[in-house]
Image (cartoon, rainbow, N blue to C red; front, side):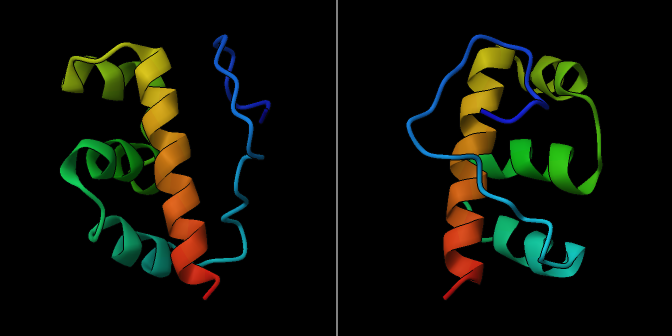
Length: 82
């Protein structure tokens, strides 16, 4: 699991690396995501807000936020790698 998370959340898949994509490419893919995960991805990946800030705004636990972010990153990476 990526070192950016300090919560006890584990995934079977590796954390996708989005560093090779531009902010514009990532933002474009975020716009295509379902609202529940797009708000998380936009807040964290584009606006560079803290997990605490985004989870409080959305009214979700940070563990759920991490799960949604992971899901968003997987979809973004898959779409941009095609």
